[in-house]
Length: 341
Image (cartoon, rainbow, N blue to C red; front, side, top):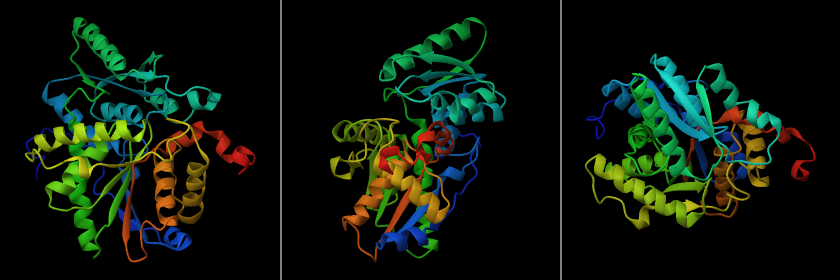
């Protein structure tokens, strides 16, 4: 496989299930909608980061690290799962929580992911500027320097796109896994839809699909930045990943497909379409989506179906990247007056 030359830790419960959503498909009266259950990867309630962390932690262990440092928003799934991965491998862990989302209720700062991060005993630092990726990374490296002076061997998992995207390799692997499952289930995916933020999952999936010779569109639904900026981020990271796996030049502008219709009012802020998507999946399929990532990605999928972008004979795959612990930080979801819902 394309990723065999990279160090890898065993963390995720794989393969994850690919299953049809019959009730949702019938409700929308459109194409067959399939779901790739990467919310079921393990590591403290699961999510897409498990695949990514296998490569980051593999690299860390190969370098003799004894402490993991990383950063993310208060309700970061990545941070929660990084802490779980470090604990599973017997490593110390320190995290930097960024204040990206303002005006939230108390539950946002105490329930869901921050509760689990604290429960697993991570040493927590805070960073006030949630829109400064370079600043957050620099703070991590400062913390790492202090740990080295104490005789520790820290490993930093950075946030910005200035570093080697080892985590994307997990979704190069996932692309192969997904295509094998489609073949076994006797259908061709006409599109793959997923949330796109750091772009690690998006870039890895896209590069894996193309490296294996398939032209399936991979649609990233913007959850943090507008379409133009996100498209550039995905392209940059995809170029890095393609080179890492020996397929330099395989990705160009035409491969980058992003949609920011569900982004407003911004990162971590719930909107009406996302709320409706969360409700619909919960009540038709018993599947939990989150307000920041999968709720907005599913809202985009639903909109594409309703506007007839796909026909009944097609098959659409939704990548469920996890995030359900964040639901506990949004108690207004059950408020009958929220969005006049």
